[in-house]
Image (cartoon, rainbow, N blue to C red; front, top):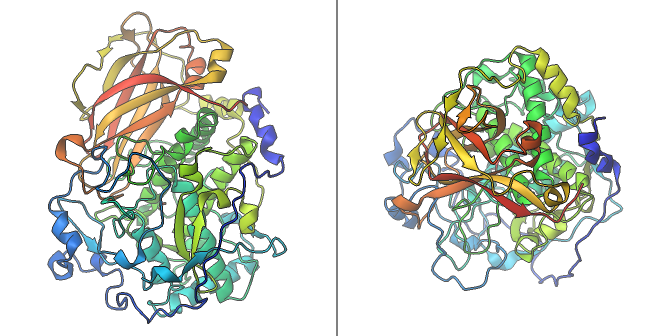
Amino acid sequence: MSSSLSFLATTASPFHHHHSRHPRKASRAPTHFSPSASGPSTNATNNKAFDNGGDKESILRLDRRNVLLGTLGGLCGAATLGRKNTAFAAPLQPPDLSKCQTANAGSEEDPLPVECCPPYTDNSKIVDYKFPSPSTPLRIRKPAHLLNADDLAKYKEAYRLMKALDPSDPWSFEQQARVHCQYCNGAYDQVGFDVPVNVHFNWIFEPWHRYYLHFHERILGKLIGDETLALPFWNWDSPDGMTIPSIFNDTKSPLYNEKRNQNNLTKVMDYHYSTQNYEDKYTEEELKLKNLYEMNTTYRESLPLPELFHGDPVRAGEEASIGKTMGRIEAIHNAGHSFVGMAKAPYRDMGNLASSGYDPLFYCHHSNVDRMWHIYRQMRGNKVDFNDNDWLKSSFVFYDENRQLVRVQVEDCLNPQKLRYTYQEVELPWADRNMIKKKLVKTKSGVKPRSTTSLVQVSEFGPDPRPLDSTIRALVQRPKKSRTKSEKDDEVEVLVIDGIELPPNGPISFEVYVAAPSGGDFVGPDLGESAGRFSKLPHTHIHKKGNAEKKKCSLKLGISKLLEEIDAEGSEKVVVSLVPKDGEVTIGGIHIDLIKTDWRA
Ligand code: C2O
């Protein structure tokens, strides 16, 4: 194994639970919950907004949300706090179940209201979650493409039963799917704030989805009376697992969903997949190697700085994405969504967060997203990702396999063993960077030596925002050149693209490359090495307070290792290239920061 990946040695280390435990009092509440007791009726509105063939009028409802829709701002809005903000930040609190409202799967300008409220609305029925006893069997999540016949039969039967339940039952597939929409399309506001709840584009992305899958998996198991039932994972970080697992392509299976891009059913998923301007220019082998290379880069650059992996902090009263960065793992995961989802607006099911939960593949996709977090934590020796109570104490509510509404918090899900599941250990083919590189150079699009012919002159980005309508190449000053090893151990070099202004809807993506100048202001024609990409799925969230000038977010990418690799450590400046793919984006500026890290390989 190459020395650059010596961090993999920690993979086999046992789990530690670093953070302290805080016993909480469970409030007494009835253990059973009757879905018929309250809540909106669900049978008539099931996912209907997507199915009515464009006649939006018929499903528009004049509730508070829709009245607001006309005045909402952009997708990445102003860094404002909602009305009842205090001076002190605090962890995110669970939503007020009694205040669910019509969600929006479209945009502010072109709303697509969708009913995704759950049948439960009574906050007094919520109790603190009682974690499964350590003596219950560990569920072992396995790679979906290697699932044996027995496991497959159980998995299918569980979904068959889930889909057969009355759609008003919180265990039903309909209600399970709605949960995702509730937490990303503005169905709830944060308690005490005029700010929507959003589990994407911020540091609760991984923990929230971990709990979502946990309860989903336990309900599936309960339905077939099997405590060991485990969600398989779509092993898209392995060359053999990079296509949609074939078990999802059997049209007679309950795992099947016809709302997928029919062109991609057997293709290799590209971590840089874009919905609109995708160039299908690589062979399968090249694509697989490029994906592995990207996964390696993701870990290598993000291990010292969890915000680069997870996304930026969002505390109570803050809106996800405003002035913030999405984590690198979320960006890769977005490619999976876009790749599977339908190619046209409203991009359902997987291609739109409001409808993603309607595809059984979603849960299998997220099983791997969760596994990537698990591996990330192992590589960091299980050091707590954010030693910050606003993360650790962030809490959510789910409906569990005992028909109970339960409250959970982030700090209790860091160790999957506590949730009584684990992942089958499989090879990590992306771990050995040198091996991947060697294979890549042999392909025709491989990592080429930097061209020194036909040099072009580049200048700085400039003070004003620029539309990214064609490739932008800009010279960017580094805070410090020729950093020593100990300086690098203390601070991570981070490329920041900020003031990113997004169009109101549709998928958005652009690519980022970094090259060393060939001397002065001149650089070769090659864009250089990929540093990462920005991607956002169509309708990730609604902002109420944003306004046209301020709908901005940012992208942060670690480049410490990359600069060594391209021999740019001695350069005062680097050349950053932004290449547009989906959507019309405006860029505010590009700069490089040094950010303190407390983690060392
Ligand atoms: Cu909540 Cu894959 O997104």
